[in-house]
Image 1: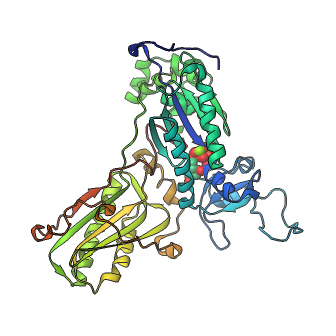
Image 2: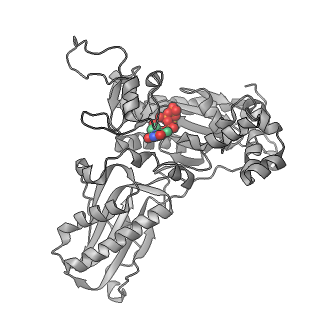
Image 3: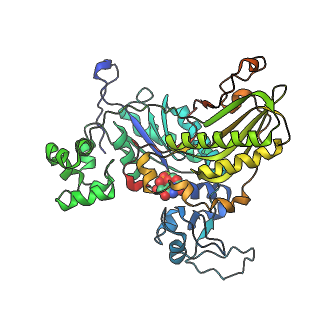
Length: 459
Ligand code: TTP
Ligand code: MG
């Protein structure tokens, strides 16, 4: 891309029409994380997914390293297909073992806890690099760096961010720089892996022109096919099409596609406030040791929490309970699953299971919480169950899940509404309508951004 120098230092505010937006997307993220802790995997085909162990029959690929993609392995593919295209390497300590054909790959299970910890390290660098960071998912974020750099040096700025991620975290990112979010996203994807593409103001339309319509934000595979049928194959074709015509065919979305194809996108990068956990709790008029009564209450709370999570398109990976025992001891327990789920039955099952410990106790108040949230927008959810949960075995098979009792938690740790502190419970009416609480977010969770996805085909 050529250098435009669109904004001169000292230009008055009202003329600062060109924000500098970075879109950062990690390369084959889960596989990169596996390589970070197992360096022998570098340069090798690596597949991260579920269901490849002997005896397992189904599961899906979460991601594949670029070497594995050469064999036709890709995200969301059935693991059986992946294994056909790229057999599993026999992992042997014997250096002379030549059981391994060259055409074999390393398969690893999904370890979200680890990927989230790597993600947190990356996000720290991003927050250090920009005042405004919109975290979109575990491996993706937008940064508004308008106040931190200038177009003349934006490429160097972006390279610096990229190098820091590489050096300090040990994973690679692809970065796109553009005057708006959708162009930045397309730019980050344009030269993957290890890409850095800068699209300066005034060049956006030209940059987009040759791209297939399917690469544009908001154009899913079905729409792309429809467009192609009417001779609209590239962004240039779409940009040149008649807006009213597109609107007539696709509604407001048609107008939106048209704008995006012309490089117009005036969304501001805004940080995203998402809850870190969702919880509901309920006090008894008098402390009770009636296990059936408390279990019934837990069931109601579990259903309410699961319902609320579903309403927010949130999947959860940790399910927890709270039992407040007299005088005012707050006990919390939680269990983490191998991956995010949207599964009301499981919330109830795990909550009751965790609560068994308090069956004989007198309790004043009980609560159910889901945390470790990840968000999918409604369209993604309707395309499948979201990517995290689809790979999980049936709920009955989750015995391998680690059980992680929370450390004795402060009230606020539970996303509490603050009403059960010492002294106030005498006034607490028995609420069969459970209290509804949500933790405000530090936006560190994983999240899928409907606005940020370039197309539904992404997931
Ligand atoms: P992506 O950024 O879409 O993919 P990626 O980082 O693996 O590869 P790329 O270099 O093309 O960016 O998704 C980020 C992570 O999300 C990915 O590493 C694994 C997970 N994921 C799934 O579990 N299932 C899926 O279908 C997709 C697309 C991603
Ligand atoms: Mg990625």
